[in-house]
Length: 377
Ligand code: HEC
Ligand code: HEC
Image (cartoon, rainbow, N blue to C red; front, top):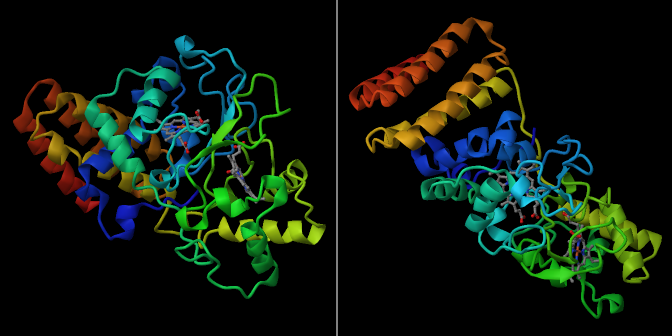
């Protein structure tokens, strides 16, 4: 499971104290925001953008061209939006998304908010999200940080030059090449700004890939954490970082020798690496404990939604959390606690019924009761 690095956690803030972010986190995990087909399949943002990263096991025949990719405007989820182009894209990581505008691999949309609305409504056939829902999703995604990598400093330069091959690779990364009109890799993948210049280019990566693929422009992808997001390019056509280097070498006649290509690849692996890429589990920190902490955090948004008497957003959250809590019970390692967790799900259902009956006082007292039970667990 990829490690999720959230900016507020690094600052020592608890998500339960950030209701907007917690609500966005919940929406990111909720099929209810999508149209019938995606909802029935249980598709959520996190299906493809797994813990802000990617999921290379995702594959739906007719939607994916290869694992980890999807033709998001192919009409499978929303017939009206079908562009009738066979133009599946490899799912991009959302780590550091606030630094990597514009959005869409082709950088066609400047605003993350507009992009996100488009994902929900056009691509997945969902109902128009409320402004609060979009605020929440954006607030949450803006917390996605890159995985820390102590091998590079904050200017994107090598923190330690003891590895000769990586150091030679860095020099090549910064060296101007005649074949790219005097540019270096670093001209577009600017080290000091997260290895992107936030601009769009046609670098010739579409030519000869497949019929009906998109126009040639893509925005420069960041190279931070790139080690974990194979395959590469918009269509996932290059399997390894070495093959990307080979591609540039032959496409732009860079004239790199075998050893130089190995050095440049080693540099990309270092720039694109991380101190700890995956979540670590042990006896206490189990997948269930993680899911349970998440769900109860989502529920804390009731602290704001009940006083506001916000039926719509409270019910949306409760439906998502109740369904997930019931599902997660099956993954519980500690079978002794099952009854208590079921009791919590029942508690949330009681809040849901109280809200349906427009009895906000009862909803408030059921919520207090829920918190007590939860803390006892
Ligand atoms: C079926 C897989 C899938 C699901 C589900 C999905 N996405 Fe994506 N996402 C993609 C693909 C593929 C792209 C590239 C699309 C493009 O370039 O137009 C993408 C692109 C993005 C981007 C732009 C990233 C960038 O670097 O430009 C954002 C932001 C995003 N998705 C957010 C979301 C949100 C929020 C949800 C849920 C509401 C979601 N996605 C659901 C596959 C998915
Ligand atoms: C003119 C700007 C530009 C230059 C110069 C450039 N790149 Fe890129 N790079 C891009 C763009 C745009 C893409 C996205 C291509 C695509 O998705 O089809 C890309 C993609 C990549 C990727 C794949 C990232 C991913 O997540 O799929 C890597 C790795 C990469 N470049 C490394 C390099 C190296 C190494 C050099 C120097 C030899 C270099 N780039 C030179 C603009 C540039």
